[in-house]
Image (cartoon, rainbow over all chains, first blue to last red):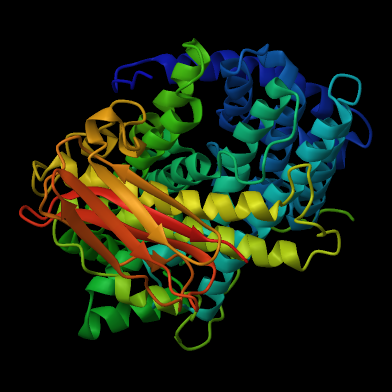
Amino acid sequence: MTTSSTEDDTVPRLLEEYGRLSQAALVSYTRAREPLRHLYRLVADYPERGGRMLRSSICLATAAAHGCEPRSALAPATAIELLHNAFLIHDDIEDGSQTRRGSPTLHVAHGTPLAINTGDALCLLAMQALSDCRDEIDLSVRESLADDLRRAAVEAVEGQALELGWRHDNAVHLTEADYLHMVLKKTCWYTMIFPIRAGAQIALGEPLAHDTFVAFGFLLGAAFQIQDDLLNLVGDEQRYGKERNGDLLEGKRTLMIIHLLQRLSGKDRDRLVTLLGDGVRDTESVGWILEKMGEHGSIEYARLMAHALAGAASRECERAFGALPDSQARHFLACLPRWVISRS
Amino acid sequence: MDGERKHWERPRLRRVAPRRCGVAEEYLKMSNRHETPQATIEETQNTAYRVLGDYLRASEAVARNRPDASNGGSTRGAINYRTLAMSMFDVWTRLAETWLQTFERGMDLRQGGMPELDAFTVGPRGSATRTASPETESVSLVVHATRPVEGRINLRTTAIRKSLVAHALRATTDGLPPIPVCVEVLGDEVVVKVHVGEGQPSGTYHGLLIDGATEVPQGDVRVRILES
């Protein structure tokens, strides 16, 4: 299986193509209806802001790589996008985030109660999307997809609980392994593992063993999450779509913070621990943390870790899909590891 | 359920005093040792596969406590114990492959910056797990055991030297005693011998094969001891 160059446009091109398909399917669940003002207008808000549709695209690409029409995997692809948007709304509330995809977050624009209710509705619509495919998908596969979706959702909330717990308890002795474990649960299952498994199960027409594609999805998802954390610090806010340094303001235990906690000592470490516990509240504190990260190479370290994980993901991709016939979709999957760490 | 009218504000944070999280204290010893980009790549991949192995073990424990777990688990993809055991075995295989590929790639990273996509280097498909082929049939694995076992030797190169040495096989489950391995040279043949004692607990064991002259990994040995 060929690997990609950084100039290869396969990922953005197919993201656009699969994204259009997914967006069209998503609209049927977020269409305007009553109660419009306080629910369905809000349900459609985040999806209409133009996300990348990464999760659904991975699902469609995996089905296509196995020789199936991408459209045939639209049900789980739609379900995971709806669930993703639900998580985004709830995450924004939990994190106190101010902007999402370049606009005010839903709870900022409409208030926390309506935002929570909208997130709940999107969760239920995700389940609806999966059960709506009963005529096209064999029962055993449908049951397996439902198992997987439930598992992805449970893993995500457990991972989120770990991360919120670290902030709540002001955990300061975390390691890279703790971080990877949290990301495996919080991000990887619903961002990578479920979409890949769902696409493959649709194409193969049979349930998969519980661990198939978990290694690839984990390594790819972990690299993706680290890059996301990096963009929060060093990315272009206009393109990134979220408030710059929001993770620092929220005291999030990113890999860069974990590394810095390991490297600092004495008064500097005490200051960081206090800031994380009390909340980073001013630009001076943010600037100080960024300066220390620069001094101790925390950002470069995180980049290197993302690179290492993406490299391992590339090998897992070869193991998982190397025997499939050459295709655009398979090439898309092979290009993902490089893409996740080079995206801006 | 009318929406609140006032502008939402980031909530005041109320945190308790710093304390150890204790989520994964066994990993504390693994942190803060990366001196070079190469070491970071190796340690990252090592840690990632270790986390994956631990996760699969934890999944097994959860599956055992599920009310519908019976006769080895569900057949429709939820949890299958036999598959799960094999997958844990596989995780350690992959880790070994990662080590081998990392060692083999050499140390030509640019210091202080991103490597030249070194972590993406992929050898010919399947080369990392190639078992003894006609070119390597002079290396063989002999497992002595009084219980059912599965053994496998993976060689990374066809040019196995007689200076081959083997690490003791370590269990993928914490706390199990290692299994000693010896290497014997019989004429042109190199024999890797594993002796499984009667009291050795069931489980999956794994160890590297190293060229004693150059200390370059040459492959790995894996043995799974089944329940008798």
